[in-house]
Image 1 (cartoon, rainbow, N blue to C red):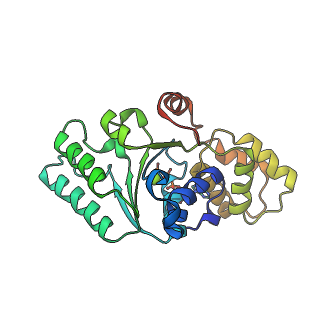
Image 2 (image 1 turned 120 degrees about the vertical axis):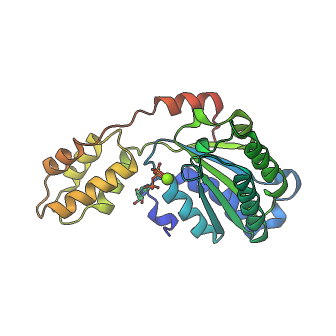
Length: 245
Ligand SMILES: Nc1ncnc2c1ncn2[C@@H]1O[C@H](COP(=O)(O)OP(=O)(O)OP(=O)(O)O)[C@@H](O)[C@H]1O
Ligand SMILES: [Mg+2]
């Protein structure tokens, strides 16, 4: 499990997690009544922006039990089994507090068509997401999230593509076998705008394994087979439903 220090960038997002998960655990008396922290969060952004990696680091940093569920791996025909499973996870998470329930690809749960599952989800959030338990949802397709479900996710955080300084740090962290200068690394960082954290990490690791004397051209060549990510849909969704923090 990664630690916060392994997550490059996302400083504001780490602060938010400290504020809503770590601090209330350390100083519960500060978070009573009106000052109770957010308990439900949505992390949205393109695939590869590192949401799974981030959430694991949060669980490790906060030293809480992580329940990691994935809408993509859930059975297509969620029948009563699905509802029972969801109910069971929330109950166990409530029993094993402090805990985080992470629902990856929340837009992939059949919440709309099989509304019994949606009812179960809403009931579970209402009944179990209390002190010591935080529900976090992840999505690469926030437009696909059911409206009633979206409303239950109070804090909506856009996981953005890495900025220049984050890209530079990612390259430095994962590049080995190299004699590139600071300037060369900066050149690469500038040229890989629009790639996700995962694109950068995977490409840099690949280049490091492939060559002994890495050049800027080697790296840029390898990136030419990756596709840049367009953040427009996320920016638009954020404008409509996101919130600043
Ligand atoms: N902020 C980061 N700092 C360092 N490494 C990162 C960061 N984000 C992602 N990575 C690296 O990229 C890999 C892929 O990230 P991750 O699986 O979390 O992406 P994801 O957005 O959850 O993808 P998907 O949408 O496919 O689920 C991680 O295992 C990690 O090695
Ligand atoms: Mg993921």
